[in-house]
Image: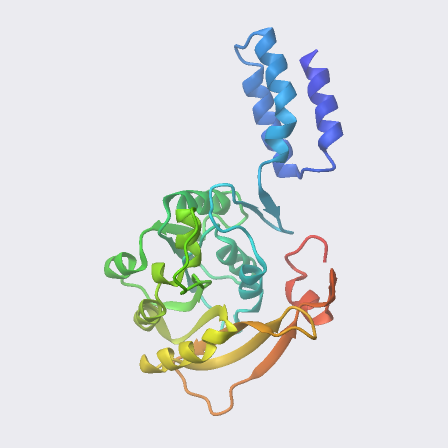
Length: 291
């Protein structure tokens, strides 16, 4: 009886869930059929679809992001940074500062042959989830996550990285919500730019690249701050949602080498609602399922 009910539930909801979730369904089924009464079985299977569908995850072409424990979910900023970051210098060691779900590190694992990809995350739940996402990916043996603040991490590590990336907290305004973890993930005072640049100067190899996404209004300040540490712009892309909207984000790549003419371009995400530009599609098509 329960096997039939399980099959019917699976068929009914299969259009809404991916293969990883189907595997979870099988796990739930085994748990349900072990040492439970008839009433408990029925109660479990009635609630099962709701448990499955409300598991927040994001499926990419080659990996899945579980994000129910993370304050900050998968967003366009992280995908942009992971897809845009220069890797033509063939980095062998990568550091992702404030990894959250591990999205950017996973994207760079897909894009590169880096032997070592270290990540650091201060939030305990996000750290746990990043490890889970790494272990469930094809590159689990190359990905590592440290549970620490950046300052503690720097004090305990003696490494050089060919590529450093960060999607840092953005908001510096005196505004708070009731969600402490989300505030920590979103507000700049949990990862000040000066501390970030100091860490980059400490960890970045001689030929290394540092890549970051920031609000457009912070672009000039970041460049001045980086210059104080002898780190200079290598490439700049300014991002806007539509052709007529204002520039919202700046993708910035830095190196230890000063260049006279910095490559500067603009990226528009949508021509109109849900109609992506060819440039954006080309940038992210190796990741998004529907592109």
